[in-house]
Length: 453
Image 1 (tube, one colour):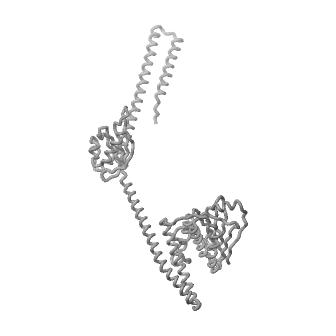
Image 2: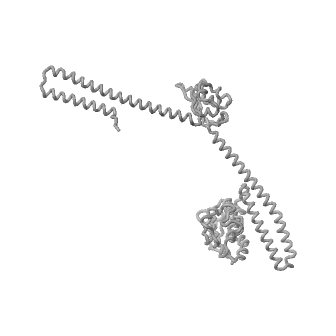
Image 3: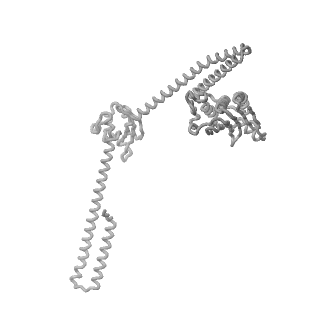
């Protein structure tokens, strides 16, 4: 492709050639003897050469300028056509009105969506076009006062995001208003559908929670009656009955407790979903909590021939938590540990870590959790092995409730597990001031344990 020379290069060439011509003719005139008539003609000849070269130079420069101008006009015309094509096809309205309220510019496909053609809009007044929209007429008046702003307005059955901007004369007065309106009808409809769907989902969730609460109440009330009368019958006739009768009473007690526990968990889930829990933080002794839990779960561990070891530091640890929530969380974790540990032991350890944090570790030697299921372990109503043939009973709510209760106390809960090698639950809670004060005045007296075999 041939490369055009720049005007600077052409002028430079003209100067160089002219200089060479003058120098050459001067040298020739000095060394070569010409008659007087030739010398007289040499001056006009030099001038003629310069005039010719200057004319060629001007012709070249003017030609290049015209070519550049034509190229620029072509590019400008193409850009203008592209811009107009875009404006005529995008769902917007580009409109300008002069100070008399007459529309001078109208572009875009927006007017067509409300029944107007572009040529029908230009030349008419704002009041004529927007006679049914007092809001849009008010927007133009507001913009003519010198304000730039945006509003969402309806025109016909369409919704537009409108932007208004005035232009000013040399005195600073608004002489025209430019308005751009983007059709957002589909977006608004989509947002309304999302809002409606959200409201319906919230309503369905509320109805479901109320249903669960009512159903749980309807189950728990007669269940309490059955369990109560079973206890009365056992007290009256327990000593007279044989081993078979004692087994029946024990079965009734176990079934009642299992069903009551299930109802309690479902009620807790319903309360969490409806944000019905009210937290009351207080200073709680971990030694006291685990002493109570040891008394409660030691019989279950003994029945399954499991070791339940609770290792506590000699100096008590106090945490800042909700009494009910903390106890319920630890109960859920221990129930899971005892349920999914066919043999071996459950170890519980507590200690202070870092600044102001207590750590509780509950570790078992049970069946463990597979790597795929671990990310779902804290989800509600999930068990690694489901269906009617699953080897372990339960609703799949234990860890989900434990996490909710710990988070209610402002703590965190983590899980480490490997299939066939047990599970470790790690809980972090905030220390209370009582522990922090005591740690500065007392030395740790070592560990003491509560064990069952």
